[in-house]
Image (cartoon, rainbow, N blue to C red):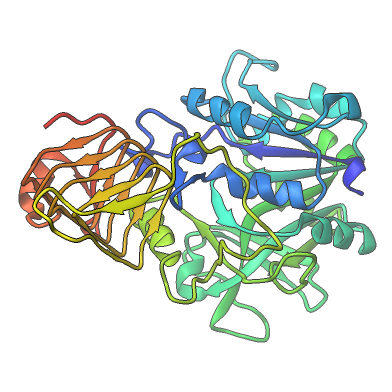
Length: 405
């Protein structure tokens, strides 16, 4: 089935709730986990699932994402019909940019028609998870579905933030509720709902027809959850596929996160530092591919005052040097320097950050190429930090890229 499938990854979102991490890059290209970009997880899922025809639909501040795709994902052979191709918004239909998830696909129907694909897989490029899409596609075919929606069980309280799938005992979808105030619970568990993951399989001919019709609807927002899927429920077979219930070829951990806010992004990173992380990056059956610069190995050395390094429960990328500093429960990307007696606690530091001697950082996210002055303190006085930086609801301080003190 994989050779008959075309994959679209929606990667053009602004990601305003992740600002300032998205001030110079799109949400899918935000760094994650010490060496990755968010989009690497969807792309790695495609790679391991045997999907070799992938179109990444870009729009907002896409240069960083395009560069990452070029450097890290130019691994397919076009002569064999394989590709990962960035497709910018080009106003192919009308005089507007992408106006919704369905509109983004509709504006590229020419690419879908040219592919001769029987199935179309639609993904979001801004979620953290591992999933075997091959098992999803097999379920779609075996059940004779027109549309298959991947979903996961969440509590009723959390379901208000998602599209909620209402399905019968045979997982036939009978209703789709977009971010409902009162979600419909599972028929066998009143405390849980089925939340849509934004992962859809369409039979291609049906997708082309419904997208063309949707473009003629002046009242449509051109969104799959709000407009397309609800219209299909009466006439077509729309099936739910429970994430993590079928193993496929990846060790199931049932971990899926929408890292759409600073706090959600921060917590997803901190999840990786748990003694038993909910998503274990070290499992060899499903490695996450990315691009890495050629930096030397990380190392620790005594500080200029003879202070010994302290390094506890943290992740270090290549090129990190800790010179007499302390790093506790933190994630450090590549080419970072921690100077003598500096202290980093529960923080995420992006590429090229230099932390001066005696500086103290706590509950911070520091974007690329920031020089933290000696004796500076961030995360210890939130009122003072709010005058200079973005501070999240949970008190996470975000220092923007290239900030000058």
